[in-house]
Structure formats: structure tokens, C-alpha cells
Length: 207
Length: 207
Image (cartoon, rainbow over all chains, first blue to last red; front, top):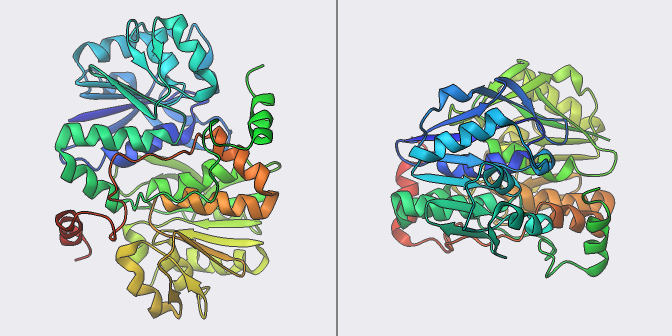
């Protein structure tokens, strides 16, 4: 079972690494990081470089993961990447995204008529791709699975691991990575964050 | 403020990327991944390579992060890495670990007389380094901060971000990465995992 994780300059690291950490631990999984330009790919902060193989290393993956990042918001996208996403989706068992990776799936035409999630700040952009935005940590719609922002990839990937290999395997992966989250604040959602924190984050958002 | 994240062959990706995702978003932070052998460093699954700079790129970081991984359990460790950890700790503001990264801090002699956390499966090994094991998501003991397994680095780093830059900044980072965890199962701790899942993970553990 090949799991292909798309990289591109400006990707958000956890969007890619969260699903990787969970799905790569599935029995029989072979995970590959791919990019239109192989070699080191720099994340959104500029501080991290992950090595990628060419897109041709994953011609027909069983699972596709599209991470988000500030550059995923560019509506036209990279034609080579969108062509690869469309081709991979034709034979994939699961096509997935984290955060604004949903906008890449959308730009590739893969979200038309589907329910989908994305980062809370970008939910209104899903409609431009013919998708119905859902306020959920992750959404399964047929074989397309979309997660909310950044850290939601862990939750989505565990739910997907259960669909692929059963609850017990998913739970064993969760226990292995000690995913028993205890954030020191309850500020991870616009519903729970203090109003001044929400205003601060909104003021820094999209130009 | 330089944040140095140690890499070594066999590191667990999320142990490094969780703190990176949070701490790299602190105002004025410059994050650097360093390793005894610079260049691509392969993670524990064999599927991921992250580029590292030499240890000399971080001679006196403000924050040190030691991630865990199966290879961190080797008690003697890599002398060059342990020397770097000791030297970095001499001038650091915070010396931190995630998962079995605590065993690296321990091997460097940095946990003597301290309370510490680590992956739930390895808590008994802390005593060999003179530390007192604590069953906690993360433990602050002076300037040394140790987190539980893999995913606990997010919680630890948010708590540390609050100490460094205040609650509001930490909460804004949490909201930005939408860290509002909703795991599909309550199996992330040996206290909550179904007994057969606990047995399954234990049977795969250390030889």
C-alpha cells in the first residue's frame, strides 16, 4: 500500500507529518514524499527542509495526502501538481487533505459536489471549488477525506487508519504515539479561543 | 532567539516537528535543525528525510529540543551529540525533550536529581540517569522541560511558548495551528487504551 504525501514550497510541516506519523505505521504501508521539483522542499516558516522524490515515484498511490500551507491558497496552483492530483485520484482508494490542502484538491476539481473541511480561516474558499464547507475536525465524503487546520491531520489519519486496518490497529498506533492530547489552553478553535486571541490571529491573516 | 532541534538517524518525526511547529512561530525565533552528520537525516520509519545543519550551527541556542526515537534508547549514545547537548545546556534558557529524547538528556547527565517525563513505555529507564519519572504530559523542572511520547511535544511546546512569550502569544499559535484535538478513539494512554490494544503495543516493544 503506497501512501503518497505531496510536498511543495511553503507547505506547513505538521499538515504532512501528522498523517505520515500515523499512516506510515499501518501494516504494509510504504510512504513516499513527492514534489513537482524533487530534492529539498522548504516549509512555510523557511526553517525546515524535507527531501522529496519526483511525482513520478507515486504514479498510482493507494492513499494521497495533500497538506496545506499559505501557498496552497493561490487559486491557480501549479498545473503539474494539479494534474498529478487528478491522475492519482483516479486510482486511489483514499484522497485526503489537511488544512488548506483542501484548496489544492478543490483547484484540481476533486471537491465538486462534496462536503469538505479546511482551516477555519479559509472555509469560505471551499465554495469557489463547488464544495460545501463543514465545520468539522475531518469529513469523509466517499473516498475524499478532508481535515481542518494543521494539527487535525492526526485525528483524520487515525480515523482513516481505522477504515483501512480496523479500530484495534488505529488504537495501537494512537497508543504508540501517545496521542492523549492535553493542550495547556482551550484556544485551538475560534469557538473557544479568547476574543482578543481570535482578533489577533485574524489581523495577521490573508492580505 | 535561536531554537536548535537535534536530529539523528532514527528520530521520530513528530517528536521534532511538534515543537518546531509551535516554537518556530514565536516572535523573533530562528529555528535550526542540527545533527552530528549534517545533510539528510532519516527518521525511524525510513520513509522521511529532513535536512540538518552541523551541530556547530547552534553553539549556544536559547532553546534546545531533543526528540526521541527507537535509537535514543541506546544507553551510551553518540559522544559528539552528548557533548553538544551538555555544552548547549550550559548557556540555554530552556533544555527540552520529547518522548525518549529524555534518555538523551539523561545520558548527557542533564536529568540528575530532576523530575522528568518520557514515553510511557520507557519511564522506568529514567531512574538509570538519576531522574525521577513523573506520569505527566510534560514536566517543568527548572529550565529542563521533558514531554511524554511523540505527540506530547505539541502540549509541551505550547506551555513553553507561554513561559517565553506569554499566554496570549501561545494561544494565538494554538489557534493558528487549530490545535483543538478530537481523536476518534480514547486510546492514547495506557490508562485509557483497551487492554488488548495495550497488550498488542507491549508485545511489539523493546526486545
